[in-house]
Amino acid sequence: MRYLLLQAQVPVVTGWAQNTFLGIEVWQYCSALAVLLAGFMLKKFLEVVVIRWLVSLFAKTSFKYDEMIVQALGRPLSAFAIVGCVHAAVYILALHVQSKTVQVLELIQKSYLVAVGVLVVWGAYRLVDVVAEYLDDIAAGKDDTLRGQFMPLIKQALRVFTLIVGTLTILATLEVDVIGLLAGLGIGGIAIALAAQDSVGNLIGTFSVLADRPYKVGDWIIVGNKVDGFVEEIGFRSTKVRTWPKTLMSIPNKTMATEIIDNWSRMPKRRVKMNVGVTYAATPEQMEALLQQIRDILKQDNDVDQDFHLVRFTDFGSSSLDILLYYFTVPIGWDDHLAVRERINLKIMHTVKQTGLAIAIPARSVRIDSALHWLSDNHTNDD
Image (cartoon, rainbow, N blue to C red; front, side):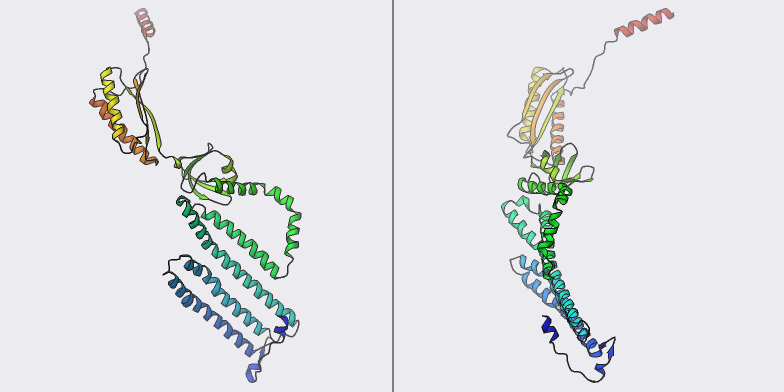
């Protein structure tokens, strides 16, 4: 490449075009400006005509990734036209540089290679979204509940990989000893490993979360005795949970991999366990009728799971005759679950009233005979 640059023919010009300014002839300025204008025109043509035409063309196909690829690579390709024209213009301006000509031309060549390498890495970086979308579709094809769950994690991993590989490739293009550089980094590997223990632990925790899938975005989880909320994002280092007070907690994935996670969103149905106490004025016949009517209430409600429910007169309480209700609601969402409980409770209240009974109020008897005797004696003495 160096010899080709040195042997390039300089155009023969005469007259005013030979005038110089800052050591550069007028025709060189004009040629460089023309090349730059051509580059900007080519960039606009690619963006406004070619790329838009390709996007509209691929939008009509059933394969959705072709349109995404064109949109991802559109800007890097148009930038490539500018980079090429800028370097061509700089080369034209440097044609008559007399001192260190070879070094100047090599510098232009290397800068061009670096710029092209950066554009390639940029294009690959933008393609990460397309690859992540493709992998997400594959995962959703096997289990639709996984759609979008690990998209942020996949994107982060692919972007980091792209930047590392791209940087090493550009350095290798500049004839940097990449192997030696990596070996040099290996000398400080022990110190880095000690400093990065938490990061490595979080990375392993991330893979554990990916493999076990104990939760997904949108799930209501309880972790230990501090975390209670909905999963908003599963990241490369941590999981973000929106708590009930609407604060955002970031839990390291290392912790998520070792703690016990209670996933409330995975409940197939939601339990209700409660006691209804009626007064001791109830007769056995009234209790039997009340029990049967409560059972009928549960059987006739579509939001009550019919696989299992219990209504039993269980205890003679201190102030009430206690009836145990044990059933499950089909809706597991908190508000929907509470709506079912509210409806059942109101029906039970109406039934208790219609049966001629009453809900017992907790009561406690306190003997005050001694206190009355003491007051009576004191009152007599005062007289």
